[in-house]
Each structure stands twice: as C-alpha cells, then as structure tokens.
Amino acid sequence: MGAVSLREPQQDRSRATRLRLLEAAVDCLAELGWVRTTVAVVAEHAGVSRGAAQHHFPTRENLVTAALDYMFDVRIADVRRRGANLPSGASHTEAVVDMLVSFYTGPLFRAAVQVWVPAAADRALRVQLVPLEARLARETHAIAVDLLGVDESRPGARETVQGVLDMARGLGLANLLTDDTKRRRRIIRQWAKILDTTLG
Image 1 (cartoon, one colour):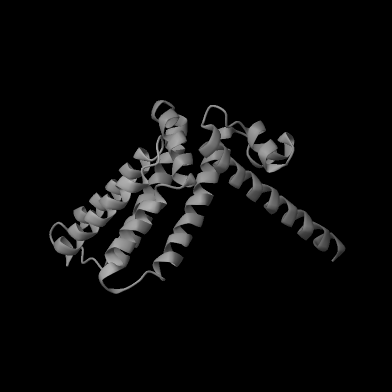
Image 2 (cartoon, helix red, strand yellow; image 1 turned 180 degrees about the horizontal axis):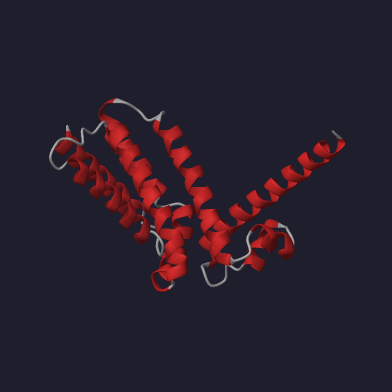
C-alpha cells in the first residue's frame, strides 16, 4: 500500500511537469518561433530542469508535436463549449463564423504556423505534423457543419463549409504580421451573409 501511495504523488508530479512543458512549448513557438524554441528554452519557461524535460521529450520534434496535439484537443473542446452557447436567430451564422475565425487567430494557430515552414523541408517533422493537421481539419469541419446545420448531401454544401474554414485560416495568416481586426470584422459579416444565402 505504501509503495502505491508513493507512486501516485510521483505520477501526479510527472503529469504536472509534462503539462507545463506542453503549454510552455506552445507559448514559446507563438512568441519566439521555431528556431529559438529549443527543449532547453521550453524547460526554462516551464520552470523545470532540462533533464526533466528531456526525460519526457527526448527531442524538440517530440515536444512540439505533443504540445500541438495537446493544445488542439484543448482548443477543440473550447470551441465545442463556446458553440453550445452561441446566439440563435439572425445573428447565429455570423457568431459561428466569428468563432471559427477566432480559432485561427489565437496563439495556437500562431504556434502551429511556426512549425509548418520547417516541416515543409524536414520530412521527419512533416510526417509527425501532417496527421495532426488532418485530424484538426476533420474536427473543425465537423464542428462547422454541426453549428451551421449544414446538410452535406446538398451539392456544394461541403465545399462551401470548407471555403469558410480556408477563409478563416487565411485571415489567421493575415493577422500574423499586423492587427487585421477591422477588415476581418467586415469579411466575417459578409461571409455570414453568403452562407445564409447559399445554405439557407
């Protein structure tokens, strides 16, 4: 019994350390970029030793992909929660589009973009990243379909939803260098009108 009770706090500490590393990795990627986000830098930001960090994640690639995977789950759960509280009626479509766009304008998207560029030239990193991106794309598409009440058996409906998500990703990219809030607001409003006309 004593050995089990000793292991449990140790496992709790290990889980807490891993979680701090995952969150710090996303923060570092978003703020510092890929080149400066090393295991040592993430460990320092997380307040853990480099040895402890490398015990959990032997390489930067392991750490980064695990961090993005974890944060994708957190963000998807957050979007689902927010989606359940969106207004109904005339403003519903715009609220959905706004929420989808916000998914691509936050720190997680900024962190993910920092990994896309090196992954384009690094096959090992790309192999780890592509399944994560594919899963995220499926999840966000399913959420959009559900929240917009889209019947995907209708010709063009699936492509219309995908167009919204591609637009949202593009607005996220535009927001990386400058604050694009004002223009983004107008585009979101217009896309909501297009969706109401096309899918209504």
